[in-house]
Length: 118
Image (cartoon, rainbow, N blue to C red; front, side, top):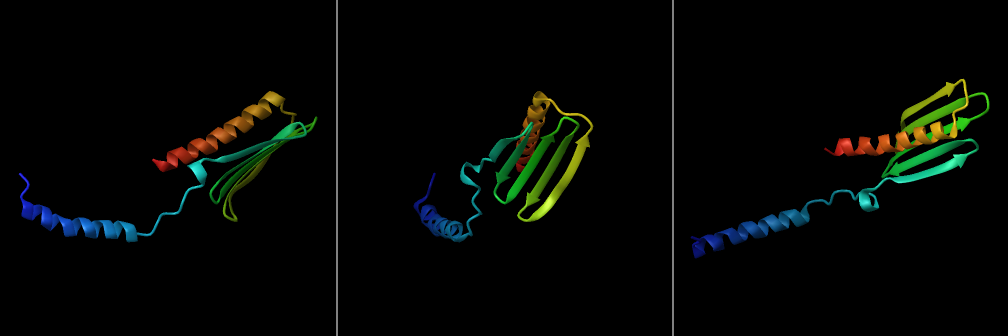
């Protein structure tokens, strides 16, 4: 059973706890909704994807010509590039292959973020 003197002795503790919580620095806010901002644009026969979340940005461009395909991938945090790579394929990618590559890139970035939260 709760004794009245115990309730009174817990009151200062509760007040101190609330003061501590209110005085603690606020953690930085995530972007609205905590979601990724995804922009996909068509570039000639290819596509470009830009994904942003907070200070991080991921970029993929697929440029398709009749002779070849160039794929560029970049990841940066603020102004520092963490990934900056390109590859050239000796044939033109089809529209379905371009769409599949862009979709896989976007899904990969999003799932990578979910794994880091755990």
